[in-house]
Image (cartoon, rainbow, N blue to C red; front, top):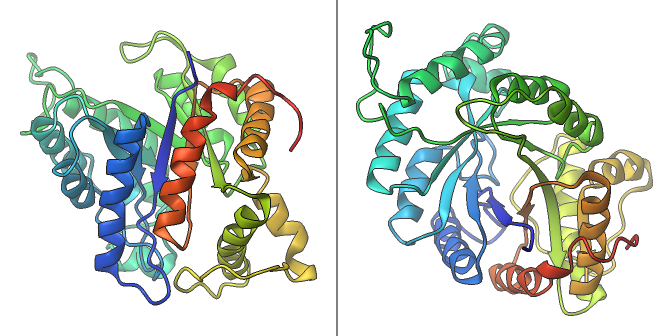
Length: 337
C-alpha cells in the first residue's frame, strides 16, 4: 500500500490577492485533494500574521467541509493554550456531528503569535502553556463517552461521545513525550523546524504506551513540497517560500511574495534558512519522490503531510497531482535528491 499523504493549508494571503481569494483557494485545494486521493487537509491557527488567514480554524474547517464530501479535515493545529478545553470540545464536537468520521483535532502548545497576541487573547502566556498536558486530558474527557459517574462537572454538548481523533503536534521532544504517554498520534513540524525530527520520532516510538485511542505509535512528518514539470520551474516557485523564510528570520513578514527567477538567499541568512528547510522536496516528480524516499528510509513515517505554499494556485494544484502520480515510488528509491 502507498504511504498516506495529506495537505497542510495555512490559507495563505498573497501579494495582489485578498483574504476572500485565499478562502476560495482553500476550497479548491481541498476539493482537489479529495479528487486526487489525499488522506486529509489540515489548517493551522496563527494570529496577527498578514499572510495567514486560518486564525478562526474551526470556522474555516466548517466552510471547507460543507463544500467537500469525503476527505478528512482538521486542525494542524489548534493552539490549545489560547482556548478553554470545553470551547474546543464544543466546536469540534459540532463539526464532527455535522460531518461524521471526517474531523481531526490536532493540538499545539504554542500561542500562534507573539506576546502582543497573548495579551490580546487575554491569556496568561507561559502558565497556559504549562497547563497543556492537563488541558489535553480534560479535552479528551469532554469528547469521550458520557460520564456516567458525573466526575466531570460540565458536559460538552455537542462534543460528548463524538471521540474526535486528537493528535499532538510539535517541533520538540515535549510533544513527542506527551503523545507517547497519552497513546495519541503525533505530527512533527519538520516543514519549518526539522532540528529535532529524528530524536522526536525515536522518543515518541520508544516511549509509546498503547491506549484506547491507538494500539501502536502513528507518526506523521511534515514536508514542504514544490513539484513541477521541470526542476527550473520548481525552483522558481520555491523562491516564494525562500522569501517568506527571509521575512521570518529578519522579522519583516508580509504577504506571500510572487516567485522570482534565479532567486538567491542573502549570504548571511543562508545557514539558518537552509537549516530550517531541510524538510523540503523541490524539483521534478522523480526528484521529489527521491527526496521523500530518503525521509521514508531514515524515518519510516506512517504518513506525510505536505505544505505547498505556492504563490500561484494553479501551480499548487498541478503539484498536488504530480505528487499523487509518484506516491507509489516513495520508499522505493532512497537516493539523495
